[in-house]
Length: 330
Image (tube, rainbow, N blue to C red):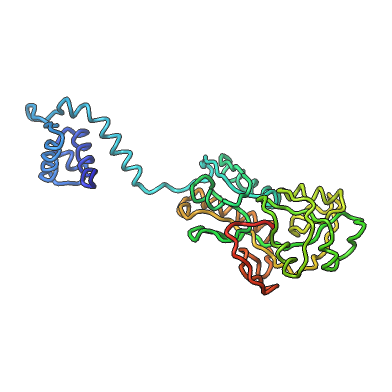
Protein backbone atom coordinates (compact mmCIF):
# COMPACT_ATOMS: atom_id res chain seq x y z
CA UNK A 1 0.00 0.00 0.00
CA UNK A 2 1.31 3.44 -0.95
CA UNK A 3 0.71 6.61 1.12
CA UNK A 4 -1.73 7.85 -1.54
CA UNK A 5 -3.87 4.76 -0.91
CA UNK A 6 -4.66 5.99 2.61
CA UNK A 7 -6.03 9.22 1.19
CA UNK A 8 -8.06 7.26 -1.36
CA UNK A 9 -9.46 5.12 1.46
CA UNK A 10 -10.60 8.26 3.33
CA UNK A 11 -12.27 9.58 0.15
CA UNK A 12 -13.98 6.23 -0.40
CA UNK A 13 -15.29 6.28 3.16
CA UNK A 14 -16.74 9.77 2.63
CA UNK A 15 -18.42 8.68 -0.59
CA UNK A 16 -19.85 5.54 1.00
CA UNK A 17 -21.12 7.42 4.05
CA UNK A 18 -22.62 10.39 2.19
CA UNK A 19 -23.77 8.77 -1.08
CA UNK A 20 -23.02 12.07 -2.79
CA UNK A 21 -19.93 13.52 -4.43
CA UNK A 22 -20.77 17.04 -3.23
CA UNK A 23 -21.39 16.06 0.38
CA UNK A 24 -18.37 13.73 0.39
CA UNK A 25 -16.18 16.59 -0.87
CA UNK A 26 -17.44 18.85 1.92
CA UNK A 27 -16.85 16.08 4.50
CA UNK A 28 -13.12 15.79 3.72
CA UNK A 29 -12.49 19.40 2.71
CA UNK A 30 -12.09 18.95 -1.05
CA UNK A 31 -13.66 20.74 -3.98
CA UNK A 32 -16.40 18.88 -5.84
CA UNK A 33 -14.24 18.48 -8.99
CA UNK A 34 -11.38 17.06 -6.89
CA UNK A 35 -13.71 14.52 -5.30
CA UNK A 36 -15.08 13.60 -8.73
CA UNK A 37 -11.50 12.96 -9.86
CA UNK A 38 -10.89 10.81 -6.78
CA UNK A 39 -14.09 8.84 -7.48
CA UNK A 40 -12.84 8.12 -10.99
CA UNK A 41 -9.59 6.72 -9.57
CA UNK A 42 -11.51 4.61 -7.04
CA UNK A 43 -13.76 3.20 -9.78
CA UNK A 44 -10.71 2.25 -11.81
CA UNK A 45 -8.97 0.70 -8.81
CA UNK A 46 -11.97 -1.34 -7.63
CA UNK A 47 -13.47 -2.11 -11.04
CA UNK A 48 -16.86 -0.95 -9.81
CA UNK A 49 -18.79 2.33 -10.33
CA UNK A 50 -19.43 2.67 -6.55
CA UNK A 51 -22.06 5.42 -7.08
CA UNK A 52 -24.63 5.28 -9.88
CA UNK A 53 -27.30 7.73 -10.96
CA UNK A 54 -30.85 7.06 -9.68
CA UNK A 55 -33.28 9.74 -10.74
CA UNK A 56 -32.00 13.10 -9.48
CA UNK A 57 -29.69 11.49 -6.94
CA UNK A 58 -27.09 8.71 -6.66
CA UNK A 59 -27.14 5.33 -4.92
CA UNK A 60 -24.44 2.88 -3.85
CA UNK A 61 -23.76 -0.22 -5.88
CA UNK A 62 -24.01 -3.64 -4.15
CA UNK A 63 -20.19 -3.75 -3.98
CA UNK A 64 -20.13 -0.33 -2.35
CA UNK A 65 -22.79 -1.38 0.18
CA UNK A 66 -20.68 -4.43 1.12
CA UNK A 67 -17.61 -2.21 1.69
CA UNK A 68 -19.34 0.58 3.60
CA UNK A 69 -18.95 -0.65 7.19
CA UNK A 70 -15.55 -2.23 6.68
CA UNK A 71 -14.01 0.87 5.08
CA UNK A 72 -15.44 3.13 7.76
CA UNK A 73 -13.92 0.95 10.51
CA UNK A 74 -10.52 0.99 8.83
CA UNK A 75 -10.55 4.77 8.42
CA UNK A 76 -11.62 5.31 12.04
CA UNK A 77 -8.86 3.01 13.33
CA UNK A 78 -6.29 4.84 11.22
CA UNK A 79 -7.55 8.19 12.48
CA UNK A 80 -7.38 7.09 16.12
CA UNK A 81 -3.89 5.68 15.59
CA UNK A 82 -2.60 8.97 14.21
CA UNK A 83 -4.39 11.19 16.72
CA UNK A 84 -2.48 12.68 19.63
CA UNK A 85 -3.22 10.98 22.92
CA UNK A 86 -5.65 12.66 25.22
CA UNK A 87 -4.50 14.08 28.56
CA UNK A 88 -3.09 11.49 30.95
CA UNK A 89 -5.35 10.75 33.93
CA UNK A 90 -3.62 8.71 36.62
CA UNK A 91 -6.90 7.60 38.21
CA UNK A 92 -7.85 5.91 34.93
CA UNK A 93 -4.52 4.07 34.54
CA UNK A 94 -5.05 0.31 34.25
CA UNK A 95 -1.67 -1.20 33.45
CA UNK A 96 0.82 -3.66 34.91
CA UNK A 97 4.46 -2.54 35.15
CA UNK A 98 7.33 -5.00 35.60
CA UNK A 99 10.17 -3.66 37.77
CA UNK A 100 13.52 -5.27 38.59
CA UNK A 101 14.43 -4.53 42.22
CA UNK A 102 15.97 -6.01 45.35
CA UNK A 103 14.32 -6.35 48.73
CA UNK A 104 16.46 -3.36 49.77
CA UNK A 105 14.59 -1.24 47.22
CA UNK A 106 11.24 -2.68 48.28
CA UNK A 107 12.04 -2.17 51.95
CA UNK A 108 13.25 1.39 51.54
CA UNK A 109 11.01 2.77 48.79
CA UNK A 110 8.11 0.31 48.79
CA UNK A 111 5.85 1.78 51.50
CA UNK A 112 6.12 5.37 50.23
CA UNK A 113 5.71 4.29 46.61
CA UNK A 114 2.66 2.21 47.48
CA UNK A 115 0.95 5.05 49.31
CA UNK A 116 1.43 7.35 46.35
CA UNK A 117 0.16 4.88 43.79
CA UNK A 118 -2.82 3.86 45.93
CA UNK A 119 -3.84 7.51 46.22
CA UNK A 120 -3.14 8.63 42.64
CA UNK A 121 -3.43 5.53 40.43
CA UNK A 122 -5.34 2.88 42.40
CA UNK A 123 -5.79 0.54 39.41
CA UNK A 124 -2.11 0.50 38.38
CA UNK A 125 -0.31 -2.78 39.11
CA UNK A 126 3.36 -3.38 39.91
CA UNK A 127 5.07 -6.75 39.47
CA UNK A 128 8.49 -6.77 41.09
CA UNK A 129 11.05 -9.31 39.87
CA UNK A 130 14.66 -9.92 41.00
CA UNK A 131 17.62 -8.11 39.50
CA UNK A 132 19.64 -10.21 37.08
CA UNK A 133 22.94 -9.71 35.22
CA UNK A 134 20.83 -9.01 32.13
CA UNK A 135 18.42 -6.34 33.37
CA UNK A 136 19.33 -4.10 30.44
CA UNK A 137 18.38 -6.78 27.93
CA UNK A 138 14.99 -7.22 29.58
CA UNK A 139 14.41 -3.47 29.34
CA UNK A 140 15.51 -3.46 25.74
CA UNK A 141 13.27 -6.33 24.61
CA UNK A 142 10.26 -4.93 26.48
CA UNK A 143 9.79 -7.74 28.99
CA UNK A 144 10.46 -5.24 31.81
CA UNK A 145 9.56 -1.58 32.28
CA UNK A 146 12.03 -0.37 34.90
CA UNK A 147 15.06 -1.54 36.86
CA UNK A 148 16.47 -0.15 40.10
CA UNK A 149 20.03 -0.88 41.18
CA UNK A 150 23.73 -0.08 40.92
CA UNK A 151 24.84 -0.73 37.37
CA UNK A 152 28.13 -1.02 35.55
CA UNK A 153 28.25 -0.58 31.81
CA UNK A 154 24.74 -0.07 30.48
CA UNK A 155 23.94 0.00 26.76
CA UNK A 156 24.46 3.52 25.47
CA UNK A 157 20.80 4.12 24.68
CA UNK A 158 19.55 3.39 28.20
CA UNK A 159 18.20 6.20 30.35
CA UNK A 160 18.97 6.43 34.08
CA UNK A 161 18.22 8.70 37.00
CA UNK A 162 19.72 8.64 40.49
CA UNK A 163 17.09 7.94 43.13
CA UNK A 164 19.17 8.01 46.32
CA UNK A 165 22.69 7.59 47.63
CA UNK A 166 23.94 5.40 50.44
CA UNK A 167 27.18 4.22 51.99
CA UNK A 168 28.55 1.00 53.41
CA UNK A 169 28.78 0.17 57.11
CA UNK A 170 29.79 -2.95 59.00
CA UNK A 171 26.96 -4.74 60.82
CA UNK A 172 27.04 -7.46 63.48
CA UNK A 173 24.92 -8.57 66.38
CA UNK A 174 25.03 -6.71 69.66
CA UNK A 175 27.56 -8.16 72.09
CA UNK A 176 29.56 -9.71 69.28
CA UNK A 177 32.46 -11.62 70.91
CA UNK A 178 35.13 -9.94 68.74
CA UNK A 179 33.72 -6.85 67.10
CA UNK A 180 33.27 -4.07 69.67
CA UNK A 181 34.40 -1.11 67.58
CA UNK A 182 35.84 -0.38 64.17
CA UNK A 183 38.32 -3.22 63.53
CA UNK A 184 41.69 -3.02 61.89
CA UNK A 185 41.80 -3.91 58.22
CA UNK A 186 43.48 -7.24 58.98
CA UNK A 187 40.90 -8.09 61.65
CA UNK A 188 38.09 -7.13 59.24
CA UNK A 189 39.46 -9.46 56.55
CA UNK A 190 39.81 -12.30 59.07
CA UNK A 191 36.15 -12.22 60.15
CA UNK A 192 33.55 -14.57 58.67
CA UNK A 193 31.42 -12.54 56.28
CA UNK A 194 27.92 -12.66 54.90
CA UNK A 195 27.61 -11.23 51.39
CA UNK A 196 24.42 -9.97 49.81
CA UNK A 197 24.59 -11.01 46.15
CA UNK A 198 21.23 -10.17 44.53
CA UNK A 199 22.42 -11.32 41.11
CA UNK A 200 24.17 -14.43 42.43
CA UNK A 201 27.64 -13.41 41.26
CA UNK A 202 30.76 -14.12 43.36
CA UNK A 203 33.18 -11.37 44.33
CA UNK A 204 32.41 -7.69 44.10
CA UNK A 205 33.47 -4.23 45.23
CA UNK A 206 34.57 -5.21 48.76
CA UNK A 207 36.62 -8.14 47.50
CA UNK A 208 38.25 -5.93 44.86
CA UNK A 209 39.25 -3.39 47.50
CA UNK A 210 40.72 -6.07 49.77
CA UNK A 211 42.58 -7.66 46.88
CA UNK A 212 44.09 -4.27 45.99
CA UNK A 213 45.61 -4.30 49.49
CA UNK A 214 46.83 -7.89 49.31
CA UNK A 215 44.01 -9.26 51.45
CA UNK A 216 40.98 -11.49 51.03
CA UNK A 217 37.98 -12.43 53.14
CA UNK A 218 36.00 -15.59 53.71
CA UNK A 219 32.42 -15.23 52.48
CA UNK A 220 30.84 -17.87 54.68
CA UNK A 221 27.33 -17.20 53.45
CA UNK A 222 26.20 -15.50 50.23
CA UNK A 223 22.52 -14.84 49.77
CA UNK A 224 20.31 -12.81 47.44
CA UNK A 225 18.28 -10.94 50.06
CA UNK A 226 19.24 -8.05 52.34
CA UNK A 227 16.58 -8.91 54.92
CA UNK A 228 17.74 -12.51 55.22
CA UNK A 229 21.36 -11.41 55.55
CA UNK A 230 20.52 -9.03 58.42
CA UNK A 231 18.49 -11.71 60.18
CA UNK A 232 21.34 -14.19 59.89
CA UNK A 233 23.90 -11.71 61.22
CA UNK A 234 21.59 -10.89 64.14
CA UNK A 235 21.73 -14.51 65.36
CA UNK A 236 25.34 -15.51 64.54
CA UNK A 237 28.88 -14.21 64.79
CA UNK A 238 29.04 -13.38 61.08
CA UNK A 239 29.49 -9.80 59.94
CA UNK A 240 27.93 -7.99 56.99
CA UNK A 241 29.09 -4.99 54.98
CA UNK A 242 25.88 -3.40 53.80
CA UNK A 243 23.84 -0.25 53.24
CA UNK A 244 23.77 2.17 56.16
CA UNK A 245 20.19 3.27 55.47
CA UNK A 246 18.84 -0.26 55.38
CA UNK A 247 20.78 -1.50 58.40
CA UNK A 248 19.82 1.49 60.56
CA UNK A 249 16.16 0.98 59.64
CA UNK A 250 16.36 -2.54 61.13
CA UNK A 251 19.03 -2.15 63.82
CA UNK A 252 16.73 -1.74 66.81
CA UNK A 253 14.31 -4.52 65.88
CA UNK A 254 17.13 -6.99 65.19
CA UNK A 255 19.49 -5.80 67.96
CA UNK A 256 22.28 -4.98 65.54
CA UNK A 257 25.52 -3.11 66.13
CA UNK A 258 26.78 -0.78 63.38
CA UNK A 259 30.44 0.22 63.08
CA UNK A 260 32.62 1.84 60.44
CA UNK A 261 34.28 -0.25 57.76
CA UNK A 262 38.12 -0.06 57.86
CA UNK A 263 38.20 0.63 54.11
CA UNK A 264 37.81 3.87 52.20
CA UNK A 265 34.68 2.81 50.35
CA UNK A 266 32.90 5.30 48.14
CA UNK A 267 29.19 5.85 48.64
CA UNK A 268 26.99 4.53 45.88
CA UNK A 269 24.00 5.77 43.93
CA UNK A 270 20.88 3.71 43.44
CA UNK A 271 19.59 4.44 39.93
CA UNK A 272 16.31 4.05 38.10
CA UNK A 273 16.91 2.67 34.58
CA UNK A 274 14.58 2.43 31.58
CA UNK A 275 14.63 2.16 27.80
CA UNK A 276 14.15 5.38 25.77
CA UNK A 277 11.11 3.90 23.99
CA UNK A 278 9.20 4.98 27.11
CA UNK A 279 10.45 8.57 27.21
CA UNK A 280 7.20 9.85 25.71
CA UNK A 281 4.91 7.39 27.51
CA UNK A 282 2.87 9.45 29.99
CA UNK A 283 1.99 6.48 32.21
CA UNK A 284 5.59 5.30 32.35
CA UNK A 285 6.77 8.83 33.12
CA UNK A 286 4.18 9.05 35.89
CA UNK A 287 5.54 5.87 37.51
CA UNK A 288 9.14 7.08 37.22
CA UNK A 289 8.23 10.31 38.98
CA UNK A 290 6.55 8.39 41.79
CA UNK A 291 9.79 6.48 42.35
CA UNK A 292 11.66 9.78 42.48
CA UNK A 293 9.15 11.23 44.95
CA UNK A 294 9.37 8.15 47.19
CA UNK A 295 13.17 8.35 47.23
CA UNK A 296 13.07 12.05 48.09
CA UNK A 297 10.77 11.31 51.02
CA UNK A 298 12.96 8.68 52.67
CA UNK A 299 16.45 9.75 51.53
CA UNK A 300 16.55 13.44 50.72
CA UNK A 301 20.18 13.83 51.84
CA UNK A 302 22.87 12.95 49.30
CA UNK A 303 26.40 11.61 49.72
CA UNK A 304 29.29 13.24 47.91
CA UNK A 305 30.84 11.55 44.85
CA UNK A 306 28.73 8.37 44.85
CA UNK A 307 29.50 5.50 42.51
CA UNK A 308 26.96 5.35 39.73
CA UNK A 309 28.88 2.63 37.91
CA UNK A 310 31.74 0.22 38.49
CA UNK A 311 34.68 2.33 37.39
CA UNK A 312 37.64 0.70 35.63
CA UNK A 313 39.94 2.74 37.88
CA UNK A 314 38.99 3.17 41.53
CA UNK A 315 40.29 6.45 42.98
CA UNK A 316 40.99 4.91 46.39
CA UNK A 317 43.43 2.33 45.08
CA UNK A 318 44.72 3.79 41.81
CA UNK A 319 44.78 0.30 40.35
CA UNK A 320 43.50 -0.38 36.90
CA UNK A 321 40.55 -2.77 36.86
CA UNK A 322 38.96 -4.64 34.02
CA UNK A 323 35.81 -2.84 32.99
CA UNK A 324 32.81 -5.00 33.97
CA UNK A 325 30.24 -5.75 31.32
CA UNK A 326 27.38 -6.45 33.70
CA UNK A 327 26.06 -5.26 37.00
CA UNK A 328 27.87 -6.78 39.96
CA UNK A 329 27.33 -7.38 43.65
CA UNK A 330 29.19 -5.92 46.60
